[in-house]
Length: 248
Image (tube, rainbow, N blue to C red; front, side, top):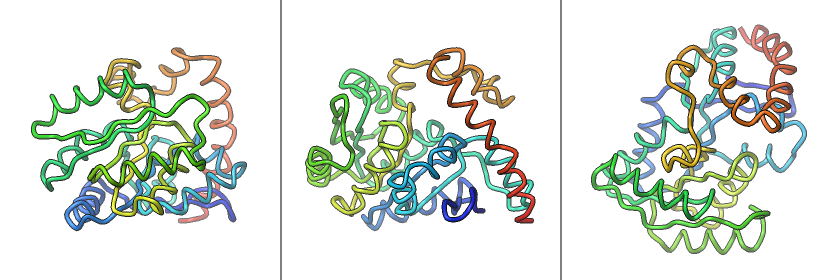
């Protein structure tokens, strides 16, 4: 299903978890690169305003739905897609790396958070190998020379899958650049997912996620940053719902 208005539309092209895992398993087995993006309402507010973000998204091979409003709109359009939050995909994707004999890389956040996430992931997924860790400095440019150097080092590390925790749009732009410089590596943009594993951020309780109230938890945790973001998200919802009905 496609979301947004032309010329800024993005298609969720992987509708289910089995389809995602089959695609990733194939890439890891064949040692071919890919980029995975997780579409949510915040991204849909940014895409029309940031050409580099839109171009990066369109360079991604796999796009899944991350956010219940995206799933609800797909049902309105009678083109249902499954909810696949980036944070929930980390452990299953790590398990696929073990299954296919590939190591992982972690890029983003801070050195301390990445080290904690690496230990947590290895304890949760027996046999997992972490072959590359890098925390870019504050103000990091995902299109700059420093990013290219990181990607070259990453390509030489032998990692099969790189989890990127830089936040949107930096992580998606970095992943798109990675498809050029490290074409044999898979990239998965997972936002705060690694910070959850390291304990540097606390994810909403499961019950709040089940009843689609994770957004409220995040707003209460960081109101100055999240309240304006969610206000923009709610503002575009009516138009997106109308677009979804038109796609029936």
